[in-house]
Amino acid sequence: MADADTTKTDALSLDDPYTVPTRYWHSLPDGRIQCDVCPRACKLREGQRGLCFVRGRIADQIVLASYGRSSGFCVDPIEKKPLNHFLPGTPVLSFGTAGCNLACRFCQNWDITKSREIDTLSSAASPLTLAKTAARLGCRSVAFTYNDPVIFMEYAIDVAKACRELGIKTVAVSAGYMNPAPRAEFYQYMDAANIDLKAFTEQFYEKITFAKLSAVLETLEYLRHETSVWLEVTTLLIPGHNDSDAEIAEQCAWIASRLGNDVPLHFTAFHPDFKMRNVPRTPPSTLRRARKIAREHGLRYVYTGNVHDPEGQTTHCPECDAAVVVRDWYRITSYRLTDSGACVNCGTQIPGVYDGPVGDWGPRRLPLKLVSAGKSGKS
Image (cartoon, rainbow, N blue to C red):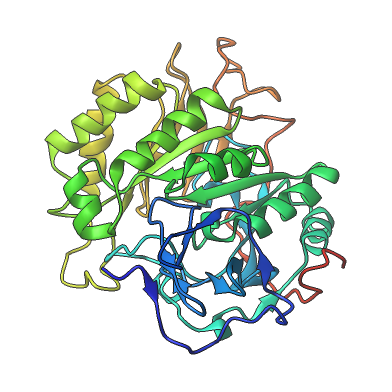
């Protein structure tokens, strides 16, 4: 597999207002420069872009070519990230850019992640504009999603800093494929993360995502044990590829022993897309089976997604088994937690981030059009 995209379309330029220098790279003896943000370690000659598309080499340095630009902005329910234990019921301002540092054959957002056209980035907003917009709309958080924020970490960090000044939290929805030094810098500004654990075999990662499972597991353990970031995990179950009882059981056993049984786990349904259109949709029975296996391994908070399954989307108190949060898709129909997240029936604290009464955003989706300055951070 090639290290970089050597095409000269959409040439990199430091004169572009959305292109900024970056820190994580080093020069190689053969004259190339290696990007050190993720384990892919793209080795670039002048004018080349990395596999992620938005990071490339210009003027003997690695730059980010999408600072302040987005493929779109939208206000979503926080449960759609999915995060079920982080400010339940509240709206989150969501956005992504273009490109990705993985090459998943099943990508569900391939029109964004696999884009090789800057025109995909049709919207723009400075960090300050984003923070102010989130506050104006009553959003409790901003999410970096749709594609992986690892590849636009400089922009995401600046947005997070601006949000923090206004009391707004930030969420990273990521595949967790990141090197230790940039990972430590990135997550010190994040309040929550949902890590997409694609499967639990190196073979799947190597052949289907062109990445390495071990690096993702390191990120999961880092987040759980070395940060205060609220963590939830998602696995998209693909028929015939990562949905066997044995693999699901091995994954759940690892989560229970290495992350703990209080980390929420989401099993979501695959639909045919991108380069795996010949694979059937995930039947709801597979998700229910996976949830049963996870619970048998001691995981307390296991959810199903992309299907209508109220029981699989309900949070139960581990002490008294009361249904403390009942969901119908992204709508909360019953909420039996205190403002601090304790079960009103028995007082058991449900792990998560709770700050006041449950939100009432519901399943609404509100697309936004934002335009403002790029590099400066000024609105």
